[in-house]
Image 1 (cartoon, rainbow, N blue to C red):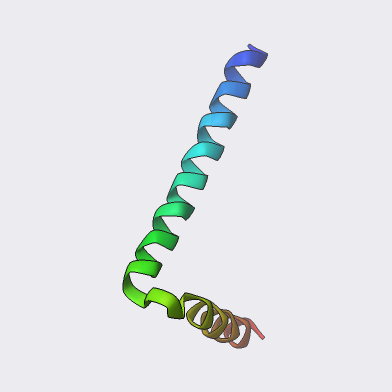
Image 2 (tube, one colour):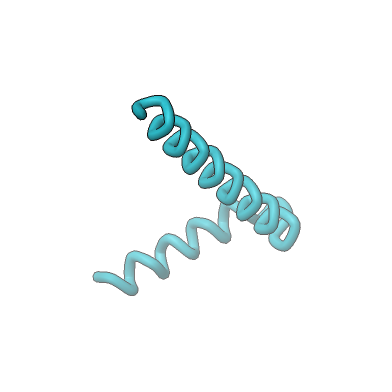
Length: 51
């Protein structure tokens, strides 16, 4: 039972990491070398949205 739960958790973590990698790949394809400035601008917008 523990091994089954551990396997599902590991699969979920790997899927999450794969989705994050795909997101960064898409951002790099669209933004190119400007990805860091884009992420900083997005983070500033996100902070002002919830403050």
